[in-house]
Length: 131
Length: 174
Image (cartoon, rainbow over all chains, first blue to last red; front, side, top):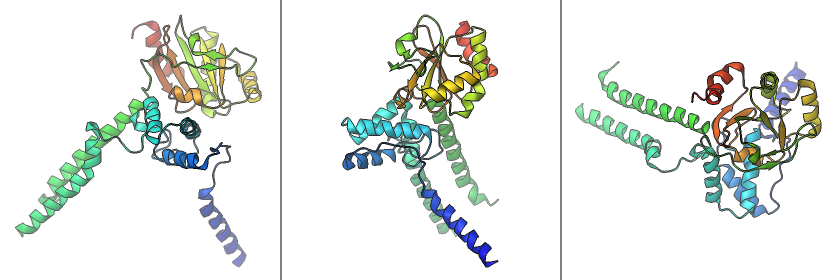
């Protein structure tokens, strides 16, 4: 009985820690560590277009891998972080940016939640004054 | 429900509806990338002896189907029979971009399932498929006789999809 429990614990722990295992696909990281760090920053700013909500930083999808290669290429060519993001958005559309651009159509997205909280607080205080 | 909650709830529901609409709209946009634009320039070496390589200037003179595929891609196998039908009945020339594959694996794949492609370009590094705003395999693009991207479809082609979406362009009713 004790042995079964031990096996279960080992299997459970293996599962827990394997969430950090990277897929065994070969990716050529940039030889310059400073550039690789910048590339990693940019990864978090680009959406994996085929995985709901993930950035290309963590995604194992083929497309994510291609996009990471693209980012590394551009960084090596001397593009700034913003330039790389713009380049990707030019091809795939603004939807590829994890952080929506601050333009008119996105005001609701950016300010909506804050606005709702404000309205909520005002509403609650109004009701409190009534009673 | 108490009256006091109706107004905030209504506002909340309204915001949800607006945000959902925007979300669905954004998904549609990504499937429209590059549509209406000229095919970006590219040049790809032959992926295998069975067919020549592929250059963007090859797309002219008639409607051509550009198909992105890989021997590793299970959905590609699903649409392969349909592509063979298109080829057998001479409906439209099919040019392929072989994404992240090897000549060996591709050779086996084509030997087993047949070859519907007149040309197959090898994209080993994924650079070209990115330039084409491809999001996965299989993906097909319909190119006009002038080299413009008329339509793109992500997913396996089938008779239904061909008839619904692609045929109207070729018949000239669109």
